[in-house]
Length: 102
Image 1 (cartoon, rainbow, N blue to C red):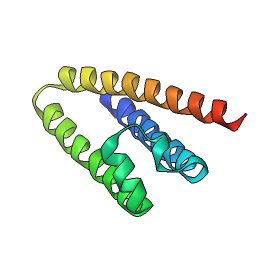
Image 2: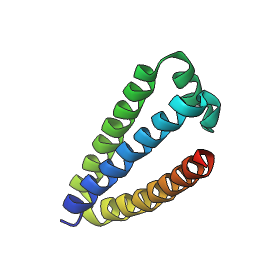
Image 3: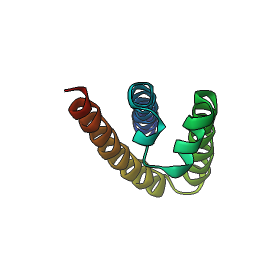
Image 4: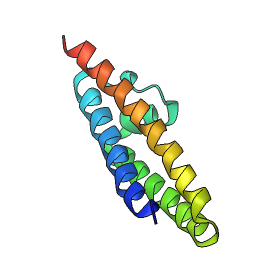
């Protein structure tokens, strides 16, 4: 049942990543994004970027719920790994945003 607490944490980190990316994009343009797919989406339209982020979260959620139905421990481990990964990504995004704002 730990996953009940981990899913909202991961979704919050996912949303924060999107917010930081859009904030940096508005200030510095699409070249600030290192992911080539997301960079192209930002170049065309922020709506495409947001749609991609939402579809990405939904797809990940479906996979996690399928895994939860089979093995809660594996789902908990995967969620924990993704929380660590997104924490690192958000920390790096914030560091870049803070450094470029000086």
